[in-house]
Image: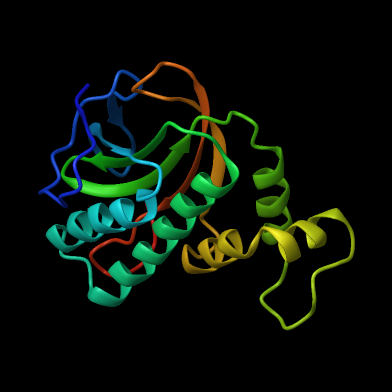
Length: 188
């Protein structure tokens, strides 16, 4: 596994990950590969945004969908810096040569608050009604605005799950979302 922490938005090269392998499904088959970039504290959002921009432009994704994905990844990286501890990683999963999934990984394995907010957002309707009262609403009022934006711009595709930091082999969590496809849709 090769990781980089430079600040250039170099052309993406997918790297094989020990957690990824060959996928054969009914609709597509191909290799899963993961590009991993180390994100430095203090510049994680800027770096993540530049990498995602370069990956999606190279994939031919429309500019408005690239801009939405940049906002999502920047919000998630900023949240990691504000609410979690390093190390931070940006991971982009490719199926074949197509970027499909983006993760911001941090060194804090506790995902309860993020789960609570995302689960709450999943239950809300698209209507103008306010969120129900209680703990999730309080978290949204205090900390969840970036997740709210990420959830909205990823069309409800934002997820959190436990993972291992690839650069240190320590427990962490990933907050992730599907990347937009060439059609501009956020989908796998």
